[in-house]
Amino acid sequence: MALVLLRTFSLLLRILCKRPSFVAYASRIAKDSYTQQTKFINRCLSASNVALPVCALDLLGAMAAVDSSCAEFLFETIDFTMKSFLGFPTNRRKVTVDQATRVESDQRTAFIDFYSALLSSGKYEVKQSCLRMNQFISPIVSGLFSDSPDGVLSFLSVIDSTILENEQHSKSMTVSFFTQGNINNLMKLLEYENP
Image (cartoon, rainbow, N blue to C red; front, side, top):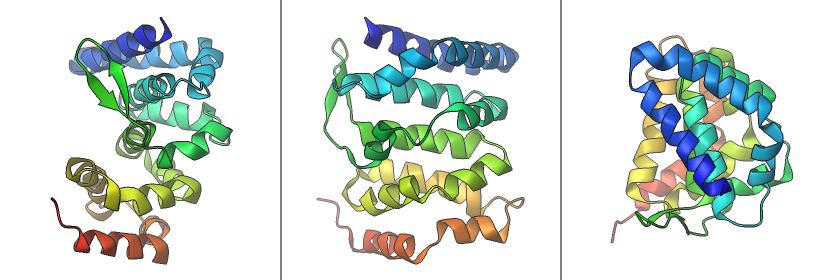
């Protein structure tokens, strides 16, 4: 039941956001829902059933993608020190999220989508803070070599539009991302040969 609820709510937010006239409404729904259902969402994020955290992360990604105020609200209210959050960037165990459509995902992909939504939708301060969260950014970048080409391009496109092409970013934002470890891991991508 929790899977259906999480997937339905995520889909609802994505549908509302497609129409500019409904974005403010979607933003209010997302904030109010997260405030009222924080314990439920946190339980889903910490669940041993792999599908629940994937769906909860998908919902958080949909909430963060609504607008900058939602991204900022989530960034300020989510407890990123939760034990389960630290494992998401490295957990690749596939799970069928939707039996009817056979949609498969994993916690890493769902977390990267959520993290990308924070970077894409968040205001400057949220982006800066996200890039300083080395406990997440380093495992994401180091694991890109094993991700699908679409996943790699999607994440790098977000980094490109958030950091490199964004005229409002500061030099410190660029330095926050381009650590020596991240540069080395990005260089590994040049050796990648798609089978």
